[in-house]
Length: 344
Image (cartoon, rainbow, N blue to C red; front, side, top):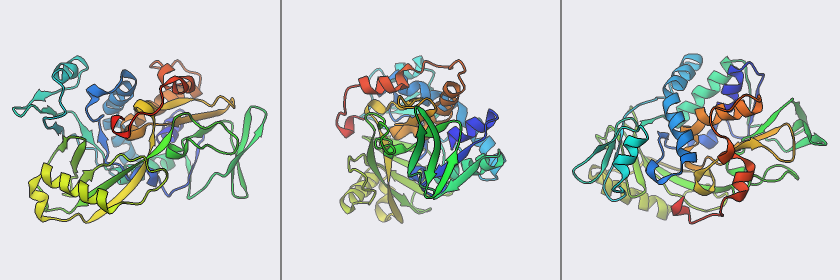
């Protein structure tokens, strides 16, 4: 939807086919608008992430204005508690323009970190796409492509053909499979994340709290998210009782006031996992008018404004505002294979 939004703003005509109703593959995320421990990521990740962080206030406001839906952009800040902090982290933040303050426990306070509420964001973006003249086909499964040489002529959905001049494959966790005989996007595979939700009144937290790979995200209405696992579980999007119990224990350890409360909801989602969290934003090598944008792993929402801007620049043959080489198909092929899930 961010790609559709960016193309519509450039005067293009856009039809978006979504296998799940209105972006439900994005529904599952926490909406933290910053890489967790950004000093541990490459420049290729942080360039897209930081540009996205800067763009989201305007993007969220426009989506709300066009759709009448509030995506709940909230610059609530993030506290990173001691244990994960490298000695150079404060200096890194200052060098890269990310406001940061040291804490007596050895942690860091990052006041610029904001959040969005993913289900409301996807509804707002869908409304914005429609308001700008785009067409959304919900619960529409693209089963194949009709091709002529190196040109894609149409996308097939059941017995219906959808013709277009240009096609974009944003298949998320499924991009490693692609359609028919097309070459799959290299090194993309599903990575499951499980989360918990606590009811209003269970806590007094007003900022994101992170420690040892685990985070708590309060919402404005008092709900609280706890997450998340990173599991190489194939396309299994079911929750697992042992993992949910471990998440609850971690939540209580990080915020003891939760000890007297039980989660009211749990769910799982599938991320488009990629080595080092670097997405692929490029033309597909098999076809001249087929583009791919996927592999954003844990930071698809954070990167969305910057990623879609770069995609549109490449598609319209405009000078890219940042070096596209790290996000190319060839770069994805050249990157070392998968490390352990925890390292990603």
